[in-house]
Length: 85
Image (cartoon, rainbow, N blue to C red; front, side, top):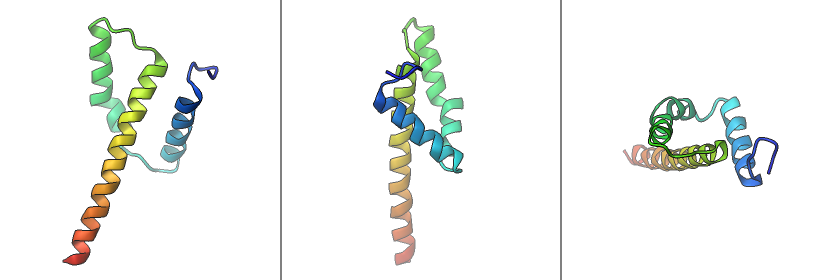
């Protein structure tokens, strides 16, 4: 566990995410944190769920990774279709 309560995998995910965002990538991060992910977390907390910071980060990072991966695949597929005309 790091000093912020994250395990090595979570800390590595956070470091990659922050580096990518700092480099101008993952604009979706802010949209997710301001939108559905934060709303989901707030809803769970309001329902009495106990969510730790590490759990929040793991869920958020996992969702972002899935969405970014799907977005990358979709962009690649669109580029293929555009190339074919």
